[in-house]
Image 1 (tube, rainbow, N blue to C red):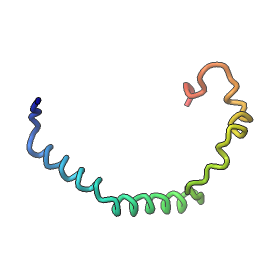
Image 2 (cartoon, helix red, strand yellow):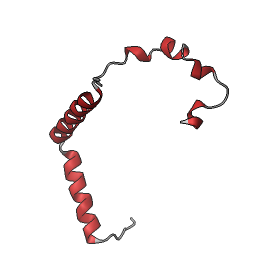
Image 3 (spheres, rainbow, N blue to C red):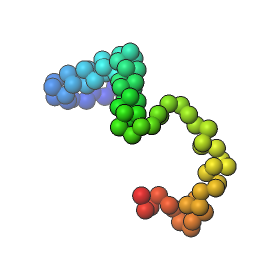
Image 4 (tube, helix red, strand yellow):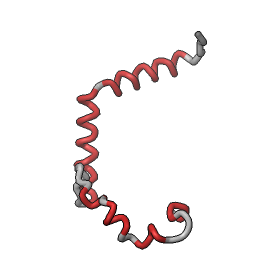
Length: 74
């Protein structure tokens, strides 16, 4: 078994992060706030709508037929 030494302040910060991330109720509320802020700013609703991500819709995009990797220009 190996032992890793880290500063006590970093250890305390990791413990706090772990405690926060284990709080599922908090994460659900934060996600709801992010969705509301996104909707308010852009007038869009994120949700779980994925009907437009079908293979047919992606095949129709001309960018997917370009030679090379289109993500290189992003």
